[in-house]
Image 1 (cartoon, helix red, strand yellow):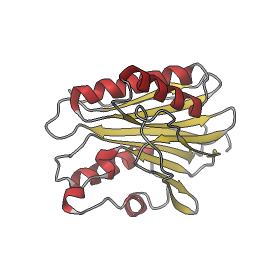
Image 2: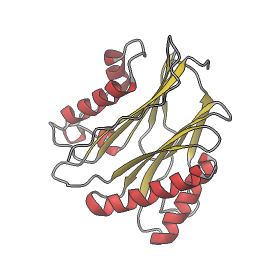
Image 3: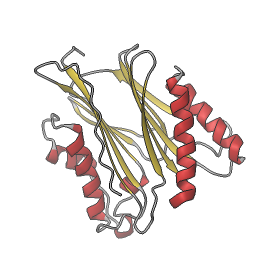
Length: 238
C-alpha cells in the first residue's frame, strides 16, 4: 500500500420498525500504535435492552483496543466480560474491523452469524466461517481473517437487519450483484456504497425493517493527490 491510498469508513444504520432505539452500536477508535478499529455490536432482542447490551459490549472492546490489546484477545475478553456480567444469559454479535498500521494489515474479527463480504481485485469472497455470538458459551472465540492492506479492496460488514431483509417473503439481498451494479469498478466512495446496501435492504422490507440494520463499509482507495487531513463525518436524525 503506498502513501496515495486513502482509507474510507462509512456506516449507515436504522432502527427496527416502530422501535425508538436501535439495538446496534458502532464506534471507531484510533489504535495506539497507528491505525483505526471499527467495532459493531448487535445486542440480543431490540429496543432499550438490546441497546444496553450492545453499548456495554462496544465500550468494553473499544477500551481494550485503545490500550493496545490485539483484536482477537479484545473479542475474547469482551465475551468473558459479558458472560460474567449476565451469567451467560444474554448475547451480542460482535464485529471488529481494524486497519493495523504496525502489521500493515486489515483484520476482520467476527463473533456473528452474519458473514462479512470481502471485495478484492479478483472479485467477491464471503468470510463466513461459523462463529458464535459473545456472552453465552464459556469458550467462545472469534473467527479472524487478516490480510495485507491493498488498494482497491473493501470490506462490507452488516448486522441481522440487512442479512435477513426480505426473509419473510422468501427474498434475500444479493450483495455481490448489488455492489457490482452500484460500484462496478470498485472505486466509489464508501458512503454511497453503505447507503446503497442499506436502501436495498429497506426495499426488501418495504420500508419497515424487521430488525435493527447496520452496514459498515471500509474501503482502501487510491488517490491521485495525497491529502494528509483526516476527516470524520456524521449525520444523525433526531
